[in-house]
Image (cartoon, rainbow, N blue to C red; front, top):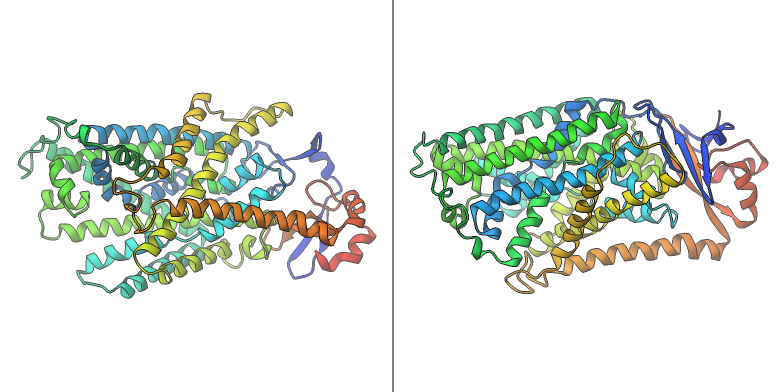
Length: 577
């Protein structure tokens, strides 16, 4: 292997005269086979995908416990403290609420099974959905990487979580706040999280583990207190009130309420696939994720159900529905009294929310980094490099910048709610395509006689995962009980759905002009080349090759984009790399 210096320090164009040995061709499609340091399993992938980083520049700091806590931190945010009341309101009865939580677990586990199989196909690629969509839909070339990259950059903000965390911080202090004071604290909190995750990968992941165990301990303590209440050992007058007729109120549920409750429930479990985004930082990732991911989901589900038992043992159904407090607030006040209980709850919620911020930032940073490695974003080194702290500071900076803009720019109310909602539907579309993509990858690999994966999901699990994602595509269109303008904004409730679809279509128009129209007009085609950065990162770079030079370019480069040998073309066009 030889390295040809690119313009700019620390960047090289990779040449590999032996690359043909690892390229497999089937018809007009070419695949590569590479093995990373983190796994003995071979990663077979379409050659147009980002190259495998055989030795992760981010290191291998993700253990079983880290992957477990990455999932737990994203799953347990602020939702479990407030969502139970929303679900109860939607389904009408305590009994149905408990059934819904179990259904949520079953649906989540089916999607988790698809992720486990996809991870077993690409064990040495981080980025999760970025990789799986790239490999499931390689044609039209660069379309999915381009669209997904735009979606992930535009919606990389975590403003709603930061604002909620700021509200609870003011709750701890006991002070009233203005809108701009709230925004200022939200920016400060997110900036602190940005500094923590950007400074050091190993120590930030250790903090994630610490926050994960604190969250587990918090829910365990609430669960134990709830069982004590249920046993009649506290001042709660009638802890059995909701359990004597658990199905009371079921007939009051509306179609919209039940639909909204299911959507809220599914999102309450979101995060059980978080650790898949760091797969290339895990030694033996399939074995680790095969245990840690299902365990995190089962553990959180068990705690969710026990916490709901605690809430419904401390207060009646009517009290929970009528109160302006969150369900956890009612529980703390009933069990521990009003003196200090609210402040103690706020402290627990703040810890939970900050851990959630960090876990989401880690997840998004890896996905943004992977989109940068695909070559469809400009300034590849910015997205890919781990200098100077051994962290993906470029993607972290983008998240921070987008979040600060989203906290400060939109006024509270309709504008803020609309922009937050706007990211939901495109994500639902991509999630549906990802599950369907698993079937496409299976069929393609079977035709090529590739080895069976280390983990294979049951067909029934894939079917349920597809149905779940179809439901998430259809359910948001169902009108709210308050009419067309009865959503969380004062205008038509489906505006964010239409705008979300429009953004994806706009990406398609941009792609068509970028890949088809302009190249034909200016008589060139895009080709990919592999670049090595000085920190060990590897990425693709798209190069404009004049039509007259295409035959020579293709002779001089393999399917991945590595140079087979030095020729006059590279000498003449070295500056354009």
